[in-house]
Image (cartoon, rainbow, N blue to C red; front, side):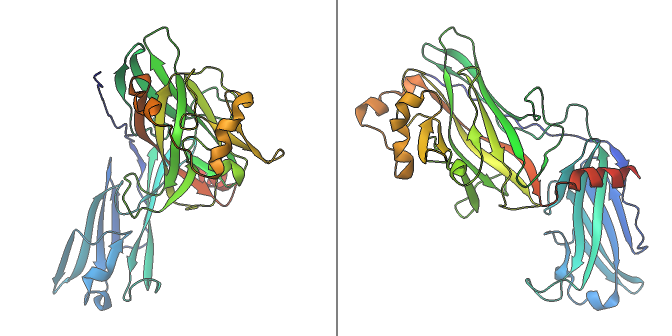
Length: 339
């Protein structure tokens, strides 16, 4: 059996609405299409150690110290330097800070200046699904995976990627197939992190683990919603406190599977707080398959190792999202820009 993989990245390219209007004549900020260019006339006390000048997490691209004065220059993409992206109904806003830190963290900076670039929000822009795939499964035809954040009534894409704590993030995942035999879409694993790429030391927050157990449902009101088709899955994810105010990426492992082959390794399980037990989304009468969510869900020998033709696996990333402390933040932020 051959698998044909096709990965792509979708980026929202905005047009500049209004560059930052600076009140500091020593700092010039130019917001370009996908980059920011900053010239900072540095005060004499800061020139002794230019390595302590920062744009977010980035050092100056260029530093000059002449008799006429010193200047730090920063030229970076908006996706670098820990820029924070906020989405309102009308705009995409990128925020950061220029700082001078004479002492290492956690000592506070002795100088700080806000950097903000505001762009028109492109029509149809939504938080990006960072990966997709097509492949062939024996007896099932060609597959294409999709994942998206929807609005509250699941009728279309979300208008914003900013959610207050405690609110729900409607997430839809689906698989398209060019065949008659149905497939079951499962989320085997999902974790949240603050990075697009995952490394061995990346700090994560587990959402789904142990082969399909929605572990976040045990400590929140997150849950898998009833399916309207076996080839799609709806997840109501409650906004959590992990990395509040930062960009969050949700890394998931999607599986297209045979609906007749549910097992401890291939399942979707919610935790029912009222019953104090795990329940199988697709067939509550088989909820015994979810009992292993409290321990370790393992395969059962040769039957699992021989089942490769029944499923296709894809690792994908959804985001970025931002969870905020203040439920009014998006509306207030939007009004502030309008005015």
